[in-house]
Amino acid sequence: MDNPISRIVEPVARWAAIACGWGVLVLSVAITIEILGRKLFAFSFHGIDDIGGYTLAITATIGASYTMAMRGHTRVDVFLVRMPDGLQRLLNLLAMLTMAVFAVFATWRGSVVLMESIEFQSVATNPLQTPLWQPQSLWLIGIGLFATIAVAYAVHAVRLYARGSSLLNRFYGPMTAQDELEAEMTARLEREAQAESHAGEGGTR
Amino acid sequence: MIDITIAGIGFGLLLGFMAIGLHVAFVMFALSMLGAMLYLGWPATLEFGTQYWGATNNFVLVAIPLFVLLGELLVRGGFTDRMYRSLADWLNPLPGGLLHTNIGASAMFAAVSGSSVATAATIGTVAIPAFKGRGYDPRLVLGSIAAGATLGILIPPSINMIIYGAMTNTSVGRLYAAGVIPGLLLTALFMLIIVVACWWKPQFAGAVEAPAPLGIRLRRLVDLVPPVIIFVVVMGSIYLGWATPTESAALGVVMSLAICAAYRTLSLNMLHECFVTTVSVTAMIMLIAASAFFLNFVLGLMGVPQALSEFVAKLGTSQGQIIIVLTIFYLILGCFLDALAMMIGTIPIVVPLIVALKIDPVWFGIYLVVMAELALITPPVGMNLYVVQGIRKEGLITDVVVGTLPFLFMMLLLVLLLYLWPDLALWLPRVSFD
Image (tube, rainbow over all chains, first blue to last red; front, side, top):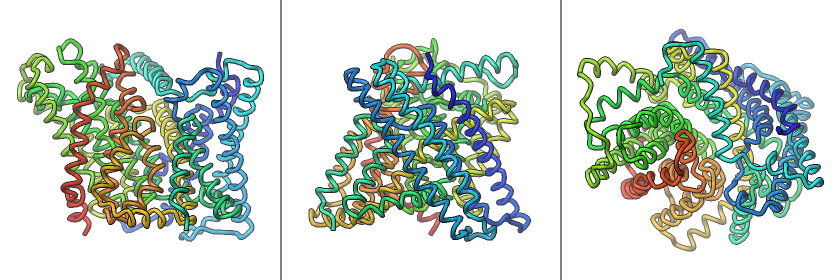
């Protein structure tokens, strides 16, 4: 049985992540054009550095929500997996609760950053003079999404804990290296199957 | 001024909370909050928002998603098996045969990839099937892949160097230059130990195979072109001052797109897979980095760096002693912590120490990367071990662990050589940038 909460949040976070990926790709192309333009034709988009920074800020927070949904944020699992089941349940619950507190606090402080930018009409000190509320809004949406998922997981974990359900460790235990690899390998096999059905010439094996 | 024992207790708590499986990013955040509340007052904790924005809106760190994306594209680009074959043409005559190709191919892939795990996954997928039925010692095969792949973060570009540079205000370009000679030296040491092992026990190596005709081998050299071009463009543009390290990463992404297109592996599905992994890996690193920046900020206000340097000055330890202590400390820590988390988590405390001792921060960056490489192959938490075992899907992971041992000694030897001749790392940045 799959985690019912993940089933809801994962597709949303995945599409948000893909959108960020496009952002990163477009940024690479823009920077490449900028370098060529600067060196060969003496023209330049001013402020591409700042746009790069904003892309990273937004990717980092929106990505944090996807990584949260996939339980991908780094945890040390060596000791945990050797502990008795009951203790593991308690510690996994604690890990989800603390992450939720962290994400909610980040949302609160992030929203203050945005509010202040709006109030003082802060603009970036670049030739574009980007009003900071623009990138910061998307950045904050990312944190909010991250917090929403973290809280949903924490609430679910509390309920599972209260019910004494054994699913808690399965749903909210750390993603072990083995799990990650299995996920990666499944994806790889699917890819290969796809590539074979296309019967392209490049992929030898 | 803060008492040194408080810093010690804080660090102990950091490790303790991590050990019970709380998220690494949260643990660093919680320790910063605790320090801020106890020593600076509540308002300091409110700075988290500004610090978070500052850490994520950072042009140096933009190189992280760019290099992860570049690596993902290359992993799926479909040129590594041909690159492997072409390298094998030339490296096979060495005693130890195809084993050398694992090292050579890792070094070559490392020169275009900033991540060791990506290197292990790519080279492992190509190399493990290549050894089927050739009679090599399986442990040495697996060990050479897992250890060879650690070169990914030493030979530039390197995600670890980017983060170190951003956190310590060290030039990433200099760090890249400093990684080249130690990276090539470690490649040579890895090959040397294979020669020694196969000379000592000839049964480790497989049967000698006749090389392909020279004409074919020469023609196959064309398969080495894609990684060479990317390396030349990425590093060359930094060296010539055409691009910053971040901008050069963008050039690399565009070039690898072109290469994927040339090898006909580019598709929308493939791109989206690359994107999801890229964003996820970036976010994982950035959340830890954001907490670490906040920890750095709080520790700075608390005066911990000054306290640590005064403490070290009072102890009168020499550079050599502190490096020995740190090496033991990182070896132990690396067994239990993820390599990157280990690096990020210890920078706020360790770097002020080494600065106080007048150790060059560029040199220390290279040293720290080598310690992170060791962390990637020391059990129980050594990501490269799991990656290689995961591709192999048979036998015990112990085989991989045993196989990496000879290479592990070579890495420690490199640390010693770096200590004895710091110019191994520092000469190239000096002649390139001064």
